Image (cartoon, rainbow, N blue to C red; front, top):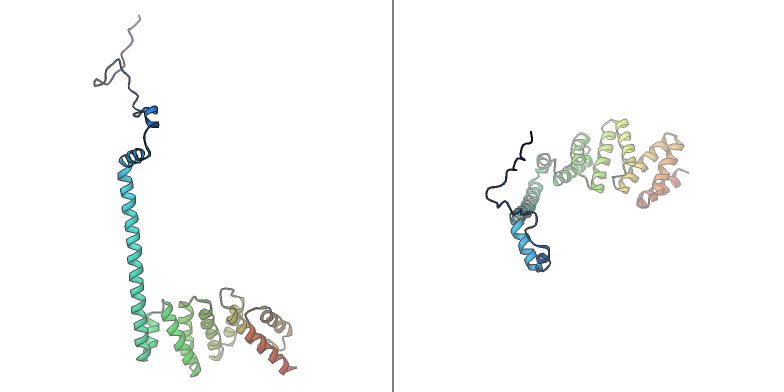
Length: 228
């Protein structure tokens, strides 16, 4: 038995004899005649919520960045004022310990360490050289702090540890060439004194091959002249 075909359900709000293609709301011929300004206006009307959201987020990011920069600048100024006050009141050691995670705190620690080393207080010197080495990343200052560690260890009775630290400095390409050359010079002298000629030649070659080790090249040359 043949059943009559079922009528497909249609939208009661749409006439049955008309099929509307909702994919093309603007006729192609008409769209070709739309001006650039009208196209921009249409795009804005269709996407204004998204665009406004993007602009808002961008403004918030810029405002946050500027606020962070202002806060950082003010913090740096305040820290510099604290440093000056600590230096004047001879409380620089306390400042260095309180700001051991900051570059200025590391610089203060380096100053205290140098003074202690000069006074032959090698234990105190080592304590503050350690603080300085942990805080300073600038190659020249970091090299100075690590050299201080090595010499303080050596003078404090930890000879092997001091020499090991000097060896580590010579191999650390992130440090300033002057610091590496200074470490190599002292290791060269130590090797020559102990009769290790091959080791001496190795450190001497490192110094002479460095384009930034002029001072230590001169000192090495003078040392060789004096020992011949």
